[in-house]
Picture (cartoon, rainbow, N blue to C red):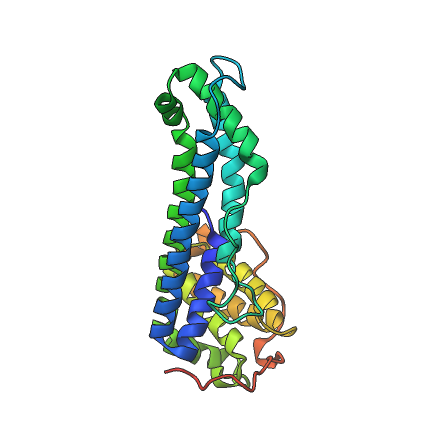
Length: 283
């Protein structure tokens, strides 16, 4: 599935924002992301259209090879577009949510000659400009598909954050049982959000539980303190064992999950990174 990691990362940031600033702030930020994505889609498609329409009919390619040329161009150029969109969805850790500077826009100037060449091949194969544009449609469809996925990421990340908040009371209770020295109100706000999201996603079943633990630890490495990864991993590993014990089918499905979901250690004895700015536990 495309954009799995950005989806989890956005959900974490939405959850953090939901806990600290409320649902209105999440809705506003999600709308900003969605609107910016609309602009990126329009700019990307317009740029490629301009390259194609700027090509002449007398240059480039060999008659009869346009389908293969379009397929190759689609594969390579959409990889670049996907990388751009991924960078847009992955907000910077050291900037407030929604305030990270988005990419200025598509700038794939190195692709212009190749797009013109492939379009010219299609023109020679299809005899008319409209035929050439139709032959290039797989490229435009693939790019639209990337942006459709990105739009879905923003919406799904909001749903994931809301689900984690709905389960937060139960998650906080379990966290307190597992690490009584570090109840949620004493934890760094980032760690509290990651733990809530991690357990919620284990239960939601969108991804294998061990995958969730592995990538939540990566969130702690990127967004929280030096001690956070081991603290988060120790607690989520215990939650993982609880979830798998309650659902044997889920345990069987997690056997081949990517990533080591366990760091040995007792979460109750782990030094938790405590943030003085951590808000009180949200009930």
